[in-house]
Image (cartoon, rainbow, N blue to C red; front, side, top):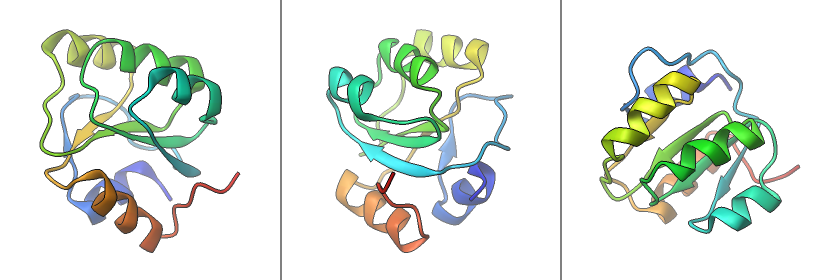
Length: 114
């Protein structure tokens, strides 16, 4: 499913203006441990996390992730938004907790299957 379509269906708020949303979300990955995401996520994953700092952008770029969703109403740090826009990494936010947003992604057909 295209990132733009998924964001619309889930009512995700885009925090990084002018980032491309045409990418394909192939699967999902949820973790707050950067080392875990670096070791186990795959290209095209939509990453669900509570982390808001600059390092999430570096991980997303290194792993070629489809985007990042921040949960529990978290706001990305200003320098995170700036770097994400520069690197064209879409960062969304939702007021939903991790468990809820992952469940909704699964209902839309996004799984953690590789």
